[in-house]
Image (cartoon, rainbow, N blue to C red; front, side):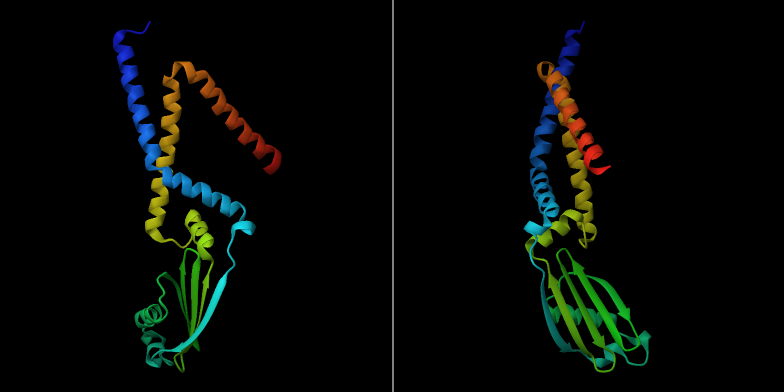
Length: 203
């Protein structure tokens, strides 16, 4: 039989778990909403996806930066910064390729990419910028594609938060004597449904 001390401990623990669950849920509300919506747009990309928009531009930079005879003297930093400033490119540099007759530079970000090809003889270049629109942007954010280290850390933190929300909710139901059985039955039912969907339609 539970003692008064046990009852007090259970009550305080239940209050703490409830507090954690409520405020973790509120803290992660925007995260849950974002990944729920983008999960839908990813799963139905044919309906929600924006059409790719491409623009092509030409230009010329200092031919000394893409030295025609000595690859070791190619000024990568100046080339990259020039393209960024001239064409308002904010995405990260993903590739810098040096070939015999040209230099290829690629920038990539969520829902966006830009590719430039510079002649090593003249410094003339062709630049193609491609945008996937707002839906393409949020889909790439969901996947963590071309988003950089900072967003990767954010996804990890989001995963931890969602795990804590789930666990605190499960622990909380164990303290609710009147709803414990029903809650565990519903949770088990959800697990079985997910497993059956996997077994029937996937595996």
